[in-house]
Length: 57
Image (tube, rainbow, N blue to C red; front, side):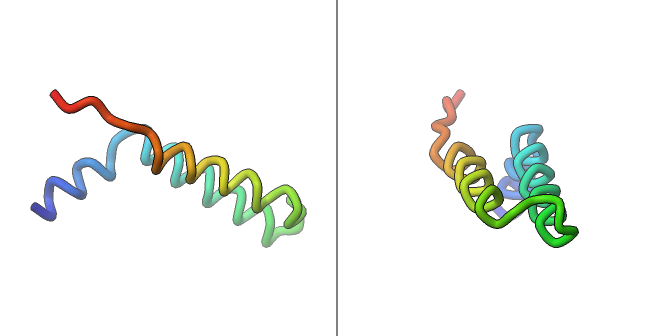
């Protein structure tokens, strides 16, 4: 059960989503991105990721 959840987490979409959020947060802490830009971008990325319906095979 845990292995299945980890396997689902390590698909390409998940990796891209995690990398995008990490890079945006890092840019914020390095002063490259303003908070007024950070919040909508991260919210948009996470909303898309968590609301995307997957077809079951």
